[in-house]
Each structure stands twice: as structure tokens, then as C-alpha cells.
Length: 302
Length: 325
Image 1: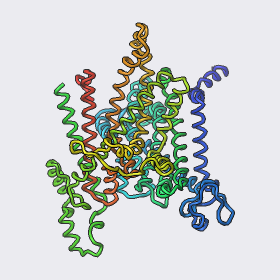
Image 2: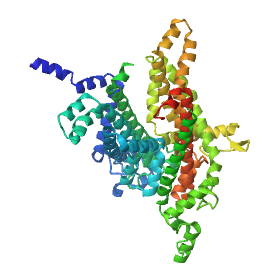
Image 3: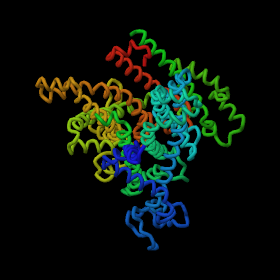
Image 4: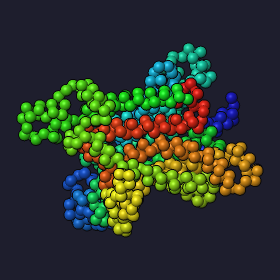
């Protein structure tokens, strides 16, 4: 193969094609940019935040419930987004809360992906009784609203980061299992899998080296949508007082804290954490939307 | 066909039994309600007597057996907190929740279908793009936060609508309803809008993609070639074909609307069964939680059954097919 041929192959590498197709939509690019910014802000929260909102030494009760733009009593700090009842800078609290929300959402999604994908691969490749049983369980699970599954589990286990992650995994694994299984069933009948079998490769190698990579594109779409769903669900549960404890204030808890002050017109305690949550979910949904169009050529033509 | 119906009903009963077992096992493991119910200074004997009175001293499977045999007679146990039958407590709040969910669904369909249709017919116009962008935002809006914002704008800032509660109800055939009075609507409109938002976004997307698909079908092209007016092509040929998936989704999503009313009800202090569930979870009121979950499962199973049967009627292939989904 000449160098020019190789370059031609590289130009048509699926990854490049995908990137080109993704960049087709300016809205989707904006969503990706926003997502990168949000994740960066979540990671860098301790360095970006004007104060450590959970270091009691840095808080001043006299600065409580100040509207956005106020200056602290000692004149050192400007509260761009106001303060809560404890005199906590809302901007700092939101950055820290974003961090918790993103970590919980991503961790839950990765775990659910791992569990659902493995079960779905086995069911799709081998079929048989395990497949039938798994699909029954998936049907029942998906027929039941995720918020109820999670609420019951949290009522069972109590609060905590690990517990809410378990609850989220339990209410979301079925989406991955079903998607993986349906793709794996189609892929398992294709010629390259048969060729791999004829070559005498081990089943483990066929399933994880050959079958798995070809099942990934639709799973990426589901995962992108489910991260958003996981973050929203965690926020909802924490808002209801069932999710994270007060010591791990995610965005949902921050919004809940501001609820009682809403009636007296102190809107900022609930408004800004909610906007941060909205932007995060919006960025994720924009990216997932475009991924679905890019990775599903059948849909793109219509 | 009768065989198909019979088989689906048997499946439904199976699922109900499995779910009742799961739900019972799950709810059983939630803390000990005795700690909450009995005076902290109670002696061990007092505790034992209270446990015996509530049947908590028996092994789990005995409790489940008792529960099941009584459940078949319509008795799901008495609430630990209120002392009255759990099922009665829930049924008393059912109309409020159902009314909220039905009105929310009507809002979602009533706005979603026309908007989706318009966006599907004019995909590349400013209006069509705005509707689609709006539906993405609608998907991303955290329901509970929107509820707070609605209260902030319409109750606190503008002072137009009450911030919570159900207000006065009017009886119709023994059911207390809000939709029959202006004051009732004033209380209903904010929570119903809040609950409707997510489904509205969903129905807009569904209708839009259905419309775009239908427009490329031969029957629409033929109808156009025949010289039918656009109004007739859209109103009859396109609309008829997108209504099938929309009706299915409305059926399937109704259960999740009832489930998600937990959030809306707790924000707007709406006296429905979702709020009761939340209170019961925090108070470890086991029979009420159990009764609520079983009722939701039953609702889901009935809805699924109806959707499947309607499908079998609309599409004869389903009833005859071997897989029988």
C-alpha cells in the first residue's frame, strides 16, 4: 500500500468521519464546548472558588442572605451570586456542588454501563435461557419508573454517596443491557464473528475484542443521555431529602436549601444552583442528540 | 385472539405476584418502625407486645403470607401512623393525583401535537428550529427546580396564583375535583404545567419525527399528487398516522407521570398520594409504602395490558405472532 493510499484510508477513518459529521451542527459544538467548561469547572472547583464554602472558619454569619453583587462585611470578598443563610458564597457552593453532582452522575453511569453491557453481551452472544430470563427482568425494570426504584432503594439503605450511586445503577443498568443485547445479537451473526470463530479464537477474545467494540457506538449515545438522567435524578432525590446527606451538598441540596427563602423573595439561593444544573443537563443533551445522529447513519438520511 | 388476551392476562398476574414479593421484601427491610412508634422509655416487654400487636414478631415469610391472603381480600394492612387501612388512605388521595396527572397529560398533548406537527412541516424555518430548541431545553429542565421557579414568578413576584395546596374542590359523582371551579383551576394550573413540561418536550419530538417520516411516504405523495389541499393531507393522512405512536406513548407515560407527581406534589403541597408516599417513607410507615407501590404496579400492568390489547386490535399481526409481545 502506497503512502497516498494510506493517507486516503486515514482520511476516511471512521473517527474522522464522525468528528466531521459532529461538527456539522454549531449548536452541538456549542454544547460540547459548554460541557468541557462545566467539567473543567467541576474538577478545578477548589482552585476556582473564591472561598471554601464548607470551611466554617471562612464563613461569616453576618454575611447571610446577601443579594448577588454584595460585598462581604470585612470588604474583602464580593459575592457575585449572593450568599445563603449561613453566609456562604453561592458561587463557591455551586462550584463545589457541581463537582459532587458530576462525580455521582459519571460514576453511576460508568458502573451501570459496565453491569448492563456485560449482561447484555452475554445474553446477546449466547442467547438461550439466560437471555430469556434477563430480558424478562429488563422488561419489568423498565416498566417501573426509575424514580420509584431509586426512592425505595434509598429508603432501604439510607443516605450517602455510595448508596445513591447504587440506587442510580439499579434504576439504569437495564437500558444498557437491552441496547447491548439487541446490537450484540445482530453483530454476532455477521461474517467477521464467524471468521473469528473459524480462526479458533477463544470465546472471551471474540466477545470482548471483536464483538464489544462494534456494540459501542449506540452505547455511547445511551450513556450520554443517561449521565444527564442520572444527574437529574440525583438532584431530584437530594432535593426530596432522600439522596445525599447535608455533608455532601450537591446542586439538588443547594436548591432545596433555598426553597424556604423563595417566599420572602430571596430568589438567588435556589435560582443559581438550578441554572447550573440546567446548563449541565442541556450541554449533555445537546451532545447526546448529535451523537445519536452521527452514530446512526440510517437516521441521518431521513 | 382470545388466547392472546388470556395469555397476556396470565402474564400480568405473574408480574404482579413477583412484584408484590419484591416490593414486600424491599419494604420489609426498611428499619424497624417500632423505634419510631413506641415511647423511647418503653420496656422490652412493651416493645414485644407492640411487635406482636403489629405482627412484626413473625418471620418474614409468615408476614408475607398473611399480607398476601389479606391483600386478595382487598386489605393491605393498617397504617402504623394513622391507624386506619393503608389502602383507604391512598384511595382517598388518588383523585387528587389522577386529576393532576390527567390535566398535565392533556396540556402536554394539547400543546405538543400541534407544535410538533408544525415543527415537522416546517423543519428549516425559525419557528420550527425554535420549537425543537425549546424541546431540548424542556428535556433538560429539572422538574423540581421549574416548580420552584413557577412559584417564585407567579406566586411570589407577580402574586397571581396561590403557591400551593389544592384549594376548594367541587364534588362530581362523589369525586372531589378542582377542574370545575375557577378557584380550583388557579390552584391546579401551576402544578399541572410543572408536571407536563417533560412530557410536552417528549410529545413534540415524537410528533415532529413522525410527521417528517410520514411526509416521505408514498401515500402522502399520492395524496398530494391527487391535488388534495395541504390541510386535508396534513389533517387526515399525516395526523392519522402519527397519532398511533402518540397514543401509545401517552398510555405508557401516564404511569410515570403518576410516579413523578411525588416531586410536584411535595413542592406545591398538593394533597395527593405522592406526598403521602414521601411522608410514609420518612416515617417508616411500611403498610402505606407497600400499598402505594402495589397500586402503582397494578396501574402499570393494567396500562401495559390495555396498550398491548389495543395494539393487537389495530395490528392483527401482533395477536397471531408467535412471540406475542
